[in-house]
Image (cartoon, helix red, strand yellow):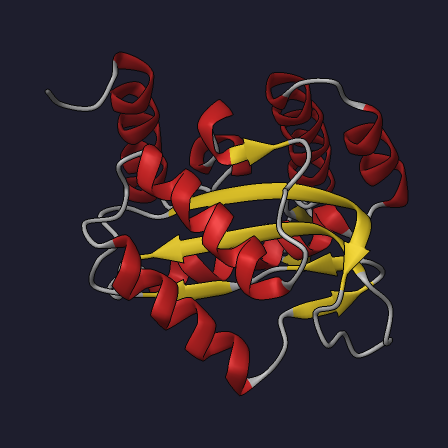
Length: 195
């Protein structure tokens, strides 16, 4: 049995955007299966294992154990906690079939060796095949910019379902996209360009 129709349509949208060189929207790389309102893990290894299970349920991993090992090794190199209660563990690995993300909240917080020393309350995991470097960087950067929004994070923590969280992310992602389009002069010279 192949991917469900929603997953197939997301793949088509993703591929079309890639071919056109368009920006990637986070809603294209998330699903209800990969967004968790309350993660159960009490340490970063358990959290990463839980989010890896979500990616496996979405069938984007051919081998969840080797991917989990890769993402833990990446985390050991340097913490992916970016401060402000946010962590974005990410890895490129052969076991990943297509770029996809998982997200979960830890209301009580979890130690993630953050630069600011504060516990992490939101974890956004990015999994990518090795050959999608541009898209991988784009997704990690967009996630970092969006998750730094206090207003968005308040709405996410107030959400009561995965679907509601996905809508908040989609809405804020579209706002970010509109704010980051090129602003050009009449001569066509770009005077502002964002990620």
